[in-house]
Amino acid sequence: MKIAIDASRYGHSQATGVEKYSYEIINRLTKYAENSGHEVKLYVRELLPNFPKEMQVVIERKRFWTLLGLSKKMRQDKPDVLFVPSHVLPLKRPKKSVIMIHDIAFDRHPKVYGLRQRLYLKWSTKYAVKHASTILVPSEFTGRELHEIYKCPAKKIQVVHHGVSELPDFTDSEKAACLEKFGITGPYVFFVGRLELKKNLVRLVRAFTGLQKGQLVLGGKPGYGFEKIKKASDDRVIFTDYLTEKEKTILLKNASVFAFPSLYEGFGLPMLEAFKAGIPVLAADIPVLREVGGKAFYPVDPLSEKDIRQGLDQVMRDEEMRARMVKMGRERLSEFSWQTAGEKTFSSIC
Image (cartoon, rainbow, N blue to C red; front, side, top):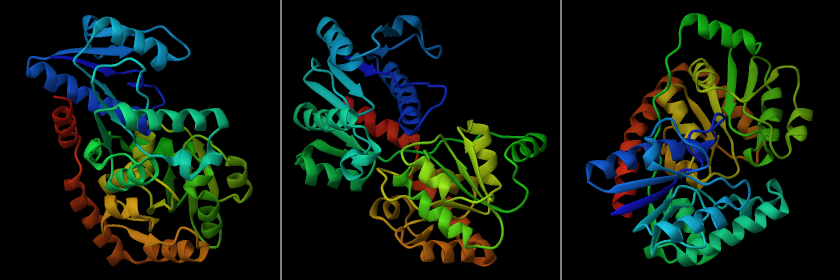
């Protein structure tokens, strides 16, 4: 079998969730395919150092990479199956085409997206629902969203939960340098992700500033509404901008609590990373985070600053509860692995 994989979002230097997913899943798919005797071609924007040159097909287009560039290659190469790790199918493709749709945040929070981007994502989702043979989703929640809003047939949808990667090691000197770099001097609450309004960071900041002690560290690049987040902050709120994986791990493992009050997620990978780091998690009481976190996190009403503030205060003070939450978080990780995700994805392709 000839397997084509869209690897255009593999291995970015400042990877977001979709790029991390592409990295983890493509590494496994190529291994499983080769072990099973299948031919694999990775369609890329530039050659990837992780794979043999003969396995890769470079498409040199700055615009319409998928719709025109990948479509042309699909027509020429005629693979038996195509796997797309993120959202957009090419216009030309094999009859068997499998795609991962991570969420439909552009429908639920349209202001976060520019008009052109929003229209493109709505069109591409409708197109995938109509033409993909299988649509993978990272959560039951996202599957329900696709079924309810885009009328995607339930038989097309397959839930494949994401896994969680190993966290990098670090030395005491690296820890000290990282904390000094960001001006962290004592106990702190940590958030990581794009700093935008749909992450509910204005309410988190206001809830935190009602506490008397500690610092709030917001890790990630600015996004839509960043100025409002910054305006609500005081001098105890630290903005790190983009974090390397090692910096993120250091800040996770040394935080008092990981706060994740997001209004909308398709999955909730940062929650799993916090479980992996062994710190208690306070998160929004929304369906997708209950699906991922089970009972291993402290749930709060994401629309109530008072509830968030009281939750932060309790989690930071109650040592017995903290230890219980950390234990439950580590146990929860057994439900999520990239190996399982890779195996299920490979089965959907082959």
